[in-house]
Image (cartoon, rainbow, N blue to C red; front, side, top):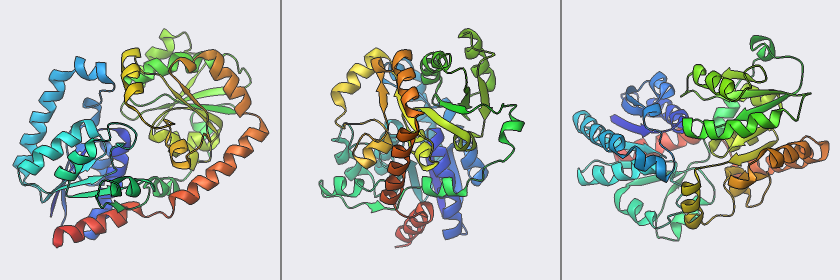
Length: 372
């Protein structure tokens, strides 16, 4: 069968790649075409558009780039029609994918959605759009089945794919030597994957480093960004000789770090599964944040706290994300008692997420549905 997948972010590329490999096992005759990234391409899909050209965040940023976004929709629709897939598989990325779902349904193309949009967090009315345009929804968070059930929609809970990703990771014992890092303890900085958020986050994160001279601060480079972009930011912020950059080694970095400052997103859950103590940070544009604050109806922004339904890890959001607060929070986090509290919480989190094998369970169910 022919599968067309659309992912618009680094996390979607990662999970999409696992799904492609699982679908190839479940359907040996499978053919794949995608909008995604390097990982999906490496897994066997014919990549048509890279997600680095799709990533616009926040209300203001979307408006400023509306012409490009509309052009992307047009190009994607034309490519799907040319390929004539048996199913369109949408991976998270709701701003783009929910519109593609509506269009595909009108074209008579079967639509599967892997990794639900966070409609339980805001704009819950979109559930009606999903119910109308998505043939099968495959969710990865334990509370999402109950959420959809409230709207009379049966969905497939397949487990969280990050369990397999983290389990598959093998740490590099020569990590420090390869990256010219000293024996000083490491603080990992994960400033996000999009240029807008990276530039916003790093100014505070790197200024915080000045207060911890006995630690070395190491930035995890996003796969979607060139290292020269980071070096130019380091120079602009006057930190070119005070911080390190590693690329394609985020998991090993977290395994070697004493703690991490993490931009809200999938990375917060990855950090937890790798058992690294963390502080969750986020700052958006003032207009985007003001709009989002009116719309969002959950208590937390990090996946860790949302799944646990408690503030297991500290969240510093918008005005609270400043050098003074970050310095205080990191000082507290590095204390033994706080590390032990978070470590116990991480174990409870893993128990809630259940067993691995999400991608294969999802792929087998998808193939079965298509063969019915």
